[in-house]
Each structure stands twice: as C-alpha cells, then as structure tokens.
Length: 404
Image 1 (cartoon, rainbow, N blue to C red):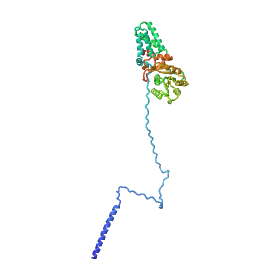
Image 2: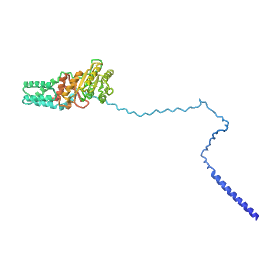
Image 3: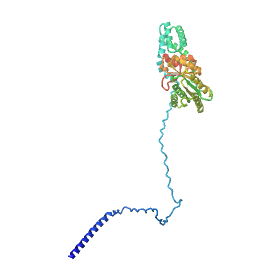
Image 4: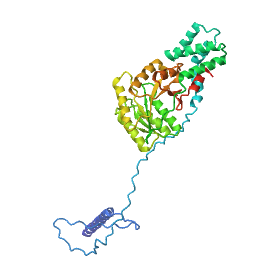
C-alpha cells in the first residue's frame, strides 16, 4: 500500500515538472525577437553617452589631420538671378510725310465743295442779262456773307461794274476770267508766302505759333512739323503750352511720328522757360528749325497776352524770331479779325494759318484777314488728315472758288 502511494507521488511530480517545462518553453519562445534575414545589415547601437559621475575612460588614440590637409567644399557658382523680362515698347514707326508742294492742288476738290456757294453765286449773278442796281446789291451781299469784309467788297464791286460796262459782252468764260483777275488782285499775289525756316545767324530758324483756344493750334503745329520735315528740315518742337494737360503729349505724339524731338516741362510750368530750353536744345543739336507751340490765349485776358509777350522776349535772347504764325479758325468769320488785331498788338505776326477751311463757305476771310493785318495767309487747313495742311496758293484757291 505504501508502495502504491509513493508511486502516485512520483507520477504527480513528473506530471507537474513536464507541465512547468512546457510553460517556460512557451514564454521563452514568445519573448525571443524574430531573427533578421541574412541579407539585412546588422545595426550596431552606439555606446551609451557617459552620465554625470561616471569615470572617464582612457582616450583612444586617433590619427588627426592638419587644417591644411582638410579640403574645403568647392564653392558652387550662384546662378544669376532671373529677372522678369522687360517688354520694350515697339518703336514708333517714322512716317514719310507727303511733300508740301502741290498739296493745295490735290485738296482742290475739297476746297471747291466748301466754297461752291460763293463762286457759283457770283458767277450766276454776273451772268444775268441786265445787271441793275438790285443785282449789284445781291453781289455785295454774297461777298459780305462770305466774310470778304466791307472795304474789300466795295472795292471788288466797283471794279467789276467798271470792267463789265467797258467789256459790253459777258460770255461765261469772260465773266469767269474777269472775276478770277479781280479776286487774285484782292488776294495779293505779290505777297511772299514762304514759311521762313532759316535764320540769318548760325542758329536754327525759330518759329512761334500763337492763337486762341479751340482753333486747332497744337494740331496745326504738329502738322506744320510734318510740312517742314517733308521739305527736308530737321525739327525740334517746344511744348510751351503748359496750361492744357494733354497739349504736350499731343505735340510729342506728332513729333514722334516724323522723328522730331519734343522739349517739354512740367504741367503748369513756365512757358517762357520751356521755349528758351527748346531753342537751346535746337542749337545744341544743330537742328534746322525750332517750332514752339504756345498756350491758347484768350484775347480778352490781358495778363495772359502779356505772358505771351514774355515768351517772345525770352526766346529772342537766342536771336530774333524768324516766323510768328497766327492760327485762326476760318469758321469764326469776323470774330477771327478781332483776335488777329489783338495778337498783332502783342507780337509781330508774320503769317496766318487758316484752319477748318473745308468746314465753311466763308472763304472771303482770307481776303479780310490779310487786309486787316497786312500779312499773308501762308497755310490753310482743309481737313483732319495729317497731311491736310497746305501752303496757300492764291491761284489754286481762286480756281477752286469759281471752278476755273
């Protein structure tokens, strides 16, 4: 019986030992890290940093290099900064203006259309079978309506009456020829209508353009620059109209189109100073002509007219003015004569430019203004085109007037 008990105890111990060994083996298998594949390199953990209180170990001897042996990294070239591309404005194309010679002949049809009433009216009246007092009064009214002026009209009518009486017969061709001769006599074919562009000194010719507001003065100045360039002159423009914001820009645009430089100043600046600088620049550049655009003066403003006189005096410090052109609007009629009279008192007008001749039937203003000032009409404007400013030619003007 005792033996059986001992045997049972031994068996129990063996069973307990086997179970314990199995549990321990299971735990060890779970805690073991997975084995790295043979192709993965072994990572060695660096030695732990010493902590405070640890004794320093003996230093390891390592080979050291001098500073001369240490190679510095090569400096890499810094790429240039890429700037935003600057888009240059396209150059202004230089235009070749139409030669001034013969312009009025080319524009004759346009002039004839605007002056058709005057020419046809005179020829119709003169062609009547009986030229009584009533007819001559109608002829006078026609001339006065066309702004020929009282004195020139009276003179023309008296000469026509005398010549018609002497001739006796009045065929259409004879009447046209007669009227042509008398109109040319009033227009003064003996006037020198050449635009003065040459100075008697070794300096550029100096021209000044004056006139009231609204006559197209700045535009006329730009067109005149084209006329001068077309005739082979080099031009410097002076933008002395500083009271109108767009005047200098407008003049500069005209100049750039024909390769003429514009001297300008700040808005509201001293016009006399700008005019002086323009002449100075023209002398320095060796230009043929300096063309000065002045502000449009109201003839009722005494102070502004005095300032125009100042511009003239300052410019003349370089030398005499060779040409002073007065720009008048042909559509203003007799009011233009009042303007002309006042300007002539301030500056010595040497020539007249009549603009907007294509927009009026009052072509007689040419006769009236010449009689008033005693100076010739040198240029007329016959449209808005760049080359519609033409030298005034009395013969072409009269031919357009009466259809000869």
